[in-house]
Image 1 (cartoon, one colour):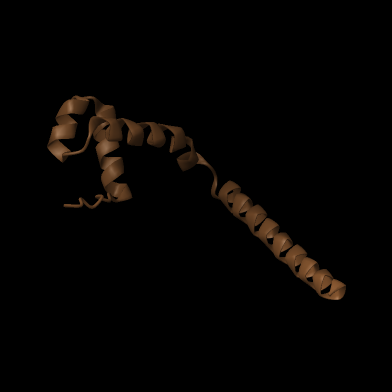
Image 2 (cartoon, helix red, strand yellow):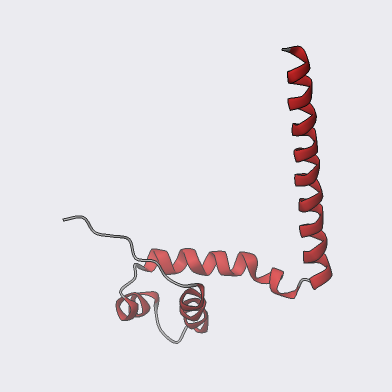
Length: 91
């Protein structure tokens, strides 16, 4: 019998991580309460702490990053059109 993987929402993960950070329950207690392996909780906790600073980034910094990515994708697209054009000239 094949077991399907369970998926968890971001809100569930954050709720669980915040509960783990409060340290009112041990990882083993949380693990049995939510029927999730303790290592998975530890992994989510680490990811949460690594990305916590992004919550306080200014919106303009996020927009600037998105704008830079958009410019790069546009440039890649433009270069691809040029490459395709030049390839047609060679044939």
